[in-house]
Image (cartoon, rainbow, N blue to C red; front, side, top):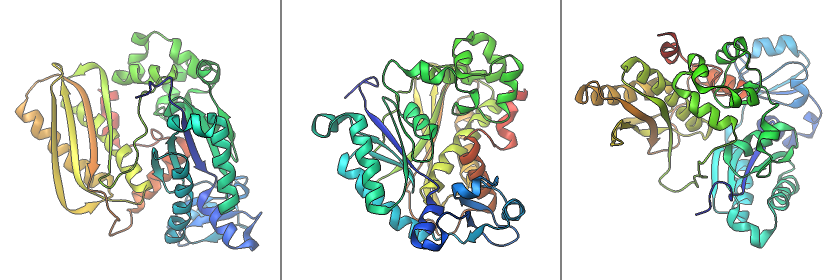
Length: 383
């Protein structure tokens, strides 16, 4: 197994995917501000072309507001079946370069091409081949980020959109990261960013160099996690999709946690992240899992299978909270070192996501996963 410094990771993110598919399928839409989303009074923008973004229209925005900003826009209902067809074509291209493909959504994926370098060339040569093949075979633009870990590769793909092509080589992490605003760090949202700015931390470099103890008043038990990212460290592997798929997130606390309210707060954040990924892949989950590692490094898991698969963050959290609460009842006052939440038994959903989940997903896509969360997830910061 390669170490994280030897890995070659590519992140591919299609540019304005839904809107680009519509413009490709209907040549009369090319060059126009195309807005894909619900067309009723309560509709939400699912995607906007770059021409529409110039008018201030973005995903997750109410369609009513989008029409105010861009009355000349072309408003199109989503065609999810069509987007799935095109996505399948794109993923078939990915699999020609490596079997290690982790799809994050219909239009976004990580590829570990470490094993392809000797046969296909450098990471940049492979990245360029992928970008060119997608354009040649689908007529769509993709942005490509390349690095030795997933965090850096994803930042790189977003750096020069649209049609971005950015490589962050080993040894260049800090030069790339240090000048970036702290809002570019995964998990630093619109609530945390002002608190960091208030203590004089404006860039990722400043956060990396800051004394950890000083940061805990703002970031709490996630301080170590954020400082590792700020240093460009991320040892997660690309999780290739298999027949028995699962999605999970976990958090290792800097200081062991005993308070149930803090654990439930973190569980809420983990559940939101897991269910967003689940919905991005247009899936629903049958089984909910909770993972707990205590101060003695003993790992405990709890799970429950639902009668019907769900893509709802609220439903998943309700079940995950019950599982964690049961464990807490069995292990009163036991310090917790790590908490994880996951789902499995993934399948096509029977119903569409709720309007609330759709709105939250859109805001997270535009501003980052921590830009919006439910009230209970903030309680630990307020205690």
